[in-house]
Image 1 (cartoon, rainbow, N blue to C red):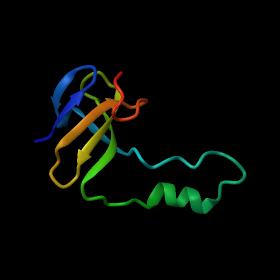
Image 2: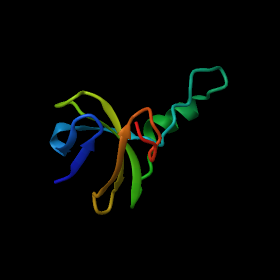
Image 3: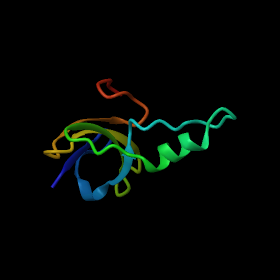
Image 4: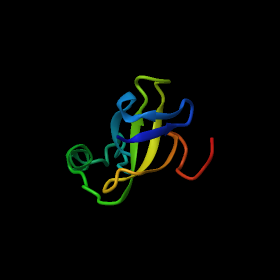
Length: 92
């Protein structure tokens, strides 16, 4: 079982969280220069990384805050957690 350290609530079981997606995937924005192809790639094309990866998780059964989790997708080891608006490695 994965244990995730919520910056507000402390270490919790992963069943309190829902996966929110790849934290490296950047929304293409709303402008006339943004093509339909860019939206398609943002929405449907995903990497399947093996090793450390940055993800969004939502603490739905706790403080209801969004966090970034750096997790090894091969071993499921949680390397770091921070509030969603902070870069990994920076403290609150």
